[in-house]
Length: 197
Ligand SMILES: C[S@@+](CC[C@H](N)C(=O)[O-])C[C@H]1O[C@@H](n2cnc3c(N)ncnc32)[C@H](O)[C@@H]1O
Image 1 (cartoon, protein in one colour):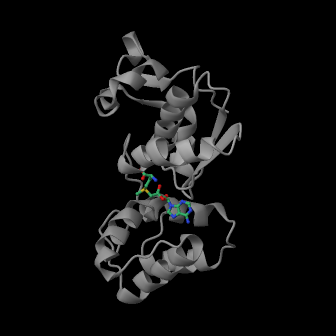
Image 2 (cartoon, helix red, strand yellow):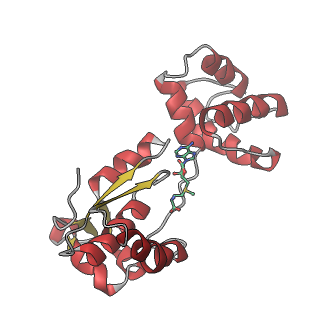
């Protein structure tokens, strides 16, 4: 099997990759995901000039857990589906149930962790909601976003998204975005009202 052809992934090698991603991230891929693993890794192997999955397996096995190649492998096998206000009932719960009870404790700073934040939409959804709700109340808030996939985290740090996503964001929050013009007219950016760190 040469480079740039679809390589065959045996069940045995699939099970190795399945175990590797499970131990590294807790992501549990069952056998139905074999084709997905095959297609996600195929082009990567071409870039590395490694002709078979079995040789890639040996290549991975020879590397320590903190090796950049292990991180590339993880990045390739994560599924980063996200969107603004995704599973909105969580945000409704936060605003209508959690915050009123939390406020009664008299605390002045709310910390929220978006633990698998993907490309940032979840963390920034939280940010615009909390800014809208808590501004000028004397209550401060901080949101931390993290993800095991370093590529999506790099994207998230910029706070820049395609402008056509505004349609999924209620109008009352549009003031927290700067809209691009001219060369960047398709883009929007979280603006200074939200303090990015
Ligand atoms: C389907 S996305 C969901 C993103 C966001 N929470 C949402 O609901 O819109 C799942 C994310 O979890 C991340 N992930 C998977 N395992 C993880 C782990 N062990 N630690 C941190 N992030 C993880 C993936 O990289 C991916 O970006």
